Length: 157
Image 1 (cartoon, rainbow, N blue to C red):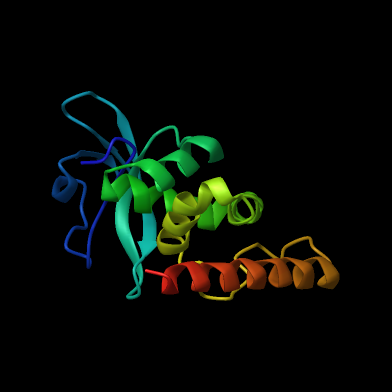
Image 2: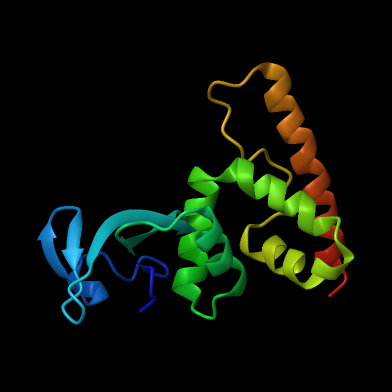
């Protein structure tokens, strides 16, 4: 069980009980060991759809989520955090990607980011809501550069 996230792998879990939690209502559960509150959510898509899961309430902010995605040894926390970042903080992620890919001291971290966030796929991960066409196009161009660098670093393995 992750410290911040619990999730299924290939949809092998669905209910709060499956995750070792006690249901409180349809979207909330309680960890019986520490009495913490967990919220039901859809998490990382490994390629067959978003996995079932829960996050510990309250959800951490971008900085903590980014640390989890990059440095956690717990797979549920890594991919749970990555999922939330992709859904809620894609603009911030883009800035981090650009910063890390241009820093020769952060090669290892960028490589991890490339794998966890599937950065080699050239798509615009940023939201388009309330942005002009030019802003959306600029985001895509920036993601294309990140994708190109991610592809190169992945191929160097």
